[in-house]
Image: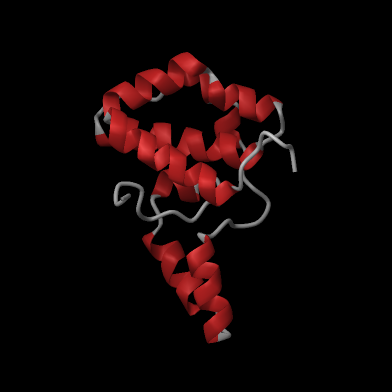
Length: 126
């Protein structure tokens, strides 16, 4: 792993905290101005790029803002395998079945699911 790259769980948490701290519209503006989606993509940090793009698209939908066409090429991508929250993977292992994972897929936010990222709660951060 790149020494500057945190775990994906930490990355997701930091993005959710930024949304909470900044608010939806300032987060959208900051994300678009930073060009981090493209930077992560060019680094081949696909989970980070797609998570940030999913968040941008989700918040845009929630606030009635048209999607930025600059990332339409990346919107065609999808992670090869589903990425579940670590807590759900642990539940699945403990239960020795994938019922929790299947349920999470049903509850996933569509903008995240599009990229094979199972995410259902981005606003409930402490």
